[in-house]
Image 1 (cartoon, rainbow, N blue to C red):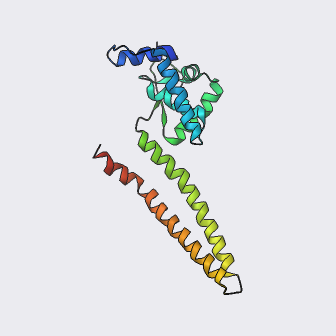
Image 2 (tube, rainbow, N blue to C red):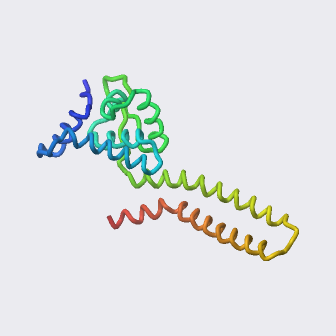
Image 3 (cartoon, rainbow, N blue to C red):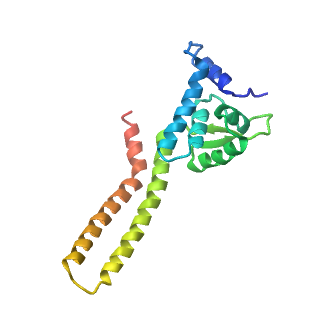
Length: 187
């Protein structure tokens, strides 16, 4: 039977995984870490619960069930279920099979930079597409303006600058994976 990972025995498992070295106030370590990652997630405009769940999974040496996650993160099983799906969509968590147990278990994707890149590409990519649509609409509106005033030339120039920036950001975004792979060689 799989051991349940509460905050207390998660710290104990981490302690054993570290070769039995004594850590100060082990039980508070995981609680603080999970809570702090939740705060960081919230400060970045993400769900606090998603951050807490990812932190709990990341720090767990074993896959965790929804019940385990609910206990460790002190949230309802429904909230855990909803937010674990979000982590799955991000590629930050994946379901795993645990022999002899019919519960759903999950583990964290440990390549944090890869998760960040995926989220950046998704979120910033959507925003860049929205900006491109807004630039197209503004350019069309300027074309339909009858006069050839200084204001029209000024607006065309500014829109061209923003469009150039948008395209540059798109190229960087499209190449983030390559930059990451190149950078891993130096780590």
